[in-house]
Length: 193
Ligand SMILES: C[S@@+](CC[C@H](N)C(=O)[O-])C[C@H]1O[C@@H](n2cnc3c(N)ncnc32)[C@H](O)[C@@H]1O
Image (cartoon, rainbow, N blue to C red; front, side, top):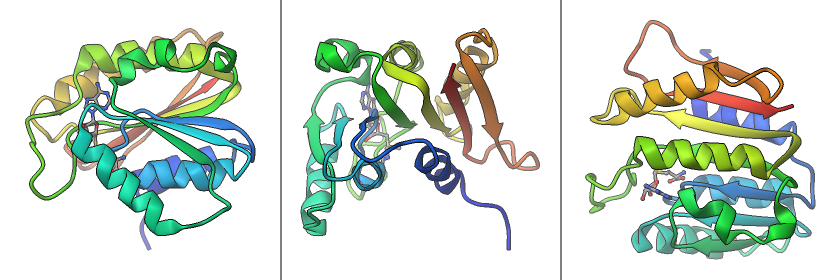
């Protein structure tokens, strides 16, 4: 049967914590798969903010959401901005009240996309720090990492170091990983204290 994929496990962890009507952030909108998941989980009284630095990604995400035509989805705000700016971009009254933040690092998985546009270690770390400040107590941040991609290994190491050295008073960090395949994608999740 096998274990759940890292993405499904991220969705499970978030689904167990995010409440209908809450706010959530997709830090790497890409094609919008996680944006749609968050919009379902937050429901029609909730709201999702989705960041991506590529207009192409946001238009794919928009198309995916429009195709759903589901009135039970949360309102989604697509932002062509770096996730490193999330604290400046989000309304001040949301600070400390966000239920979940999702990161899926690497490059846009779409035909014709520029694979040289990838998430970068420094901006990712800045955004992770900001995420912890934006989250409510017991809110969750999930990060899917790609150590098998060029640049992804260094970024994964840095994120793992960041999570493993977080003081327990800030939150609890876990890893979900197939340990016989060191190059396979894996998941880090942090639940804020
Ligand atoms: C692996 S993809 C995300 C996949 C997405 N969750 C999906 O469902 O398709 C990573 C995305 O991060 C975006 N990205 C790279 N640097 C970024 C940054 N600083 N801020 C926000 N998005 C960024 C890329 O443009 C790319 O679309």
